[in-house]
Length: 239
Image (cartoon, rainbow, N blue to C red; front, side):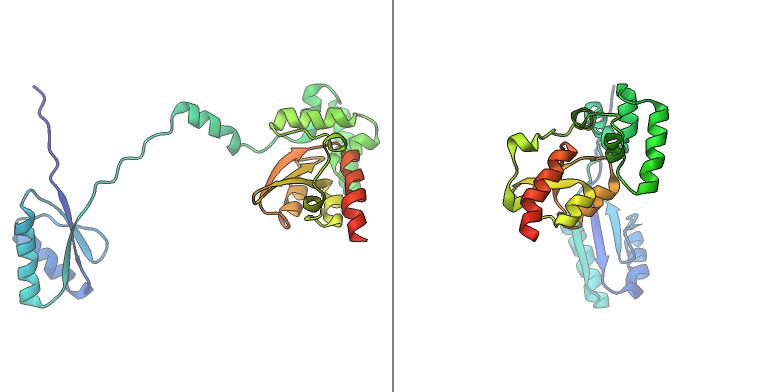
C-alpha cells in the first residue's frame, strides 16, 4: 500500500542584525526546530506547528532581545521542466553558426571546391565579399546566389526592382555603410527594420548595419538591385 508523504510547510525567519544570527539559530534549535541557513541573515524551518505558535516564538524573541525578526512563509519553487523535444529541436538550429555562402554554393553544385578556394583568396586580398568576387568572375548568377541564401537560411528573397523599397526607411542607413555592407533597408514594421543583404552570412556586414539599426530582420536581394537602389534613393539624398 502506497503511503502519501505530506511535506511540512516551510517558513523563513529573518533578522536584520548579523551579530544576532547565531543566537537566533540556537534559539530555534532549542525549540526543537531544524533551521537551515538561507543567506547570512535568514533561516528556513519546516514544521507542522500552527502559525500562531511560530508567531509566539518570534514575539518572545523580540520582547527579550529587542531585535527585530520577520516571519514569512516560503513558497516551493516549481522544479524546472525540460523543454519538449519538439521545442528543443526547433531551438537547436539557432545555436549553430550560419552556413557560409561558399559552402552553400558548393553543396548546390554551382561552383567547385577549387573555384571556392580561389575566390576566397581573392576576397581576402581585395577585402571584398565572397559573393562580389564570384559574381565578378562570372562563376554564378545573381539570382542563383540570392535564392540559394534564401532557401538555406530560411529568410525572404526580395526582388527590389519589382517590389521597391520605402524611400524614407532606406535613408535610415548611411549611404557609405550600405555600399560597404551591400545592404539596404526595405521597410519598417514598428521598431523593426527589414534589411536586404547581398550576403547575409557576412558578419562584418551585419555588424555594420546594426550599429545604425539595432532592431532588424534580415532578407536577401540581388547585389545589382541593392546597388541601383542605393544610388537612386540613398545616394541621391546624401548629395
